[in-house]
Length: 257
Length: 225
Image (cartoon, rainbow over all chains, first blue to last red; front, side):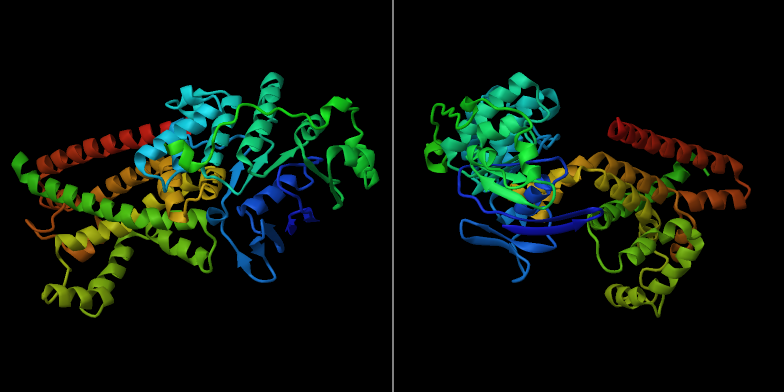
């Protein structure tokens, strides 16, 4: 992807490309990471640029191609989860299964909620559950779409430390089980290095460096990126942590049966 | 006039206000949604046109309606052809509905627009990323989240339509047994010196309006809590 966007007092002009797996966008607050996610999801139009997912062009301003968010098949989990407050948790997940028949929809929603350990909350409303539970439910809802990619905008930043640790493991496991490429924004270096197969570092000055956490920390491309990645010393064990849990089928056919 | 004598004006007013409010809901909510969520060419002019009846004297709005519904007006020609009547819809209870609709429209639209604009746009974005169309997003997410504000606006519109006088008298006339709504009947009673009927009508009016405001306030309090 290559994207440029000019907002009041802010210019973003960046480009990167990654393979499937767990990608983390890391950098200073205000460097344009969340803006990048919005433009990937299609909820914001770039002034110019191109977004290609798995060979399919979703946006190309030169060719006047624009695929609206509802046809991109890209899931999005916001920092505050954005669960619909007027629906139950199950209602939220079923909403993403609009094209499914009634009984299958309900069963599928429960399968997803169960995988994320929140099936017991199915009949509750979003204002009756905790921040970590909301993120799990939002993740279940986004996965219900069977997305081609899943974008996560600082999903852990508002959570307490023990919940964050638990959620990190869960995100990693769910990404591996589903095989869906995840792109997550964070400004937490530990989180970035723990989760990322590929790290995309936004320097804040327009430069972007892409690589594995180990590569980038070993060879930062600019002084700003060095400052970012060397802000804290990370133990060697952090890199490439693997938390693969029990495999649960996440595809449509198996879960309906 | 006896208590039973106010039955016709009261029934007519409720009928006119109910139909006008229904029309306001059908047309006003989509208009409010467009104004709250979209930028388009001519939006400023559209906003002025929608809100104009709120600031114009009802008699002036009524005069415009008279021109529109009259013999040479665009709507007049159409309704004349449809009804076969020489005056079309003029001086019928249906024209009172049109007058109430136009006068109550801006009240409902401005309340609904504020309520829709207050819905976190992140919810609409999330709905789209979940594969839902603009229409589905509006119907299943945005409008339900703005529902209380929208209903509050419609309740105000109903109260306004119930008491409509100026525009109604211009297009519907004041024909006893046909177009004499409550407001017109209060005027008639005062003009004929029948203070007892006037007082009775005014008390009924006040009670109905207070009940509507009570409902509106409860809805608005629930929205802002």
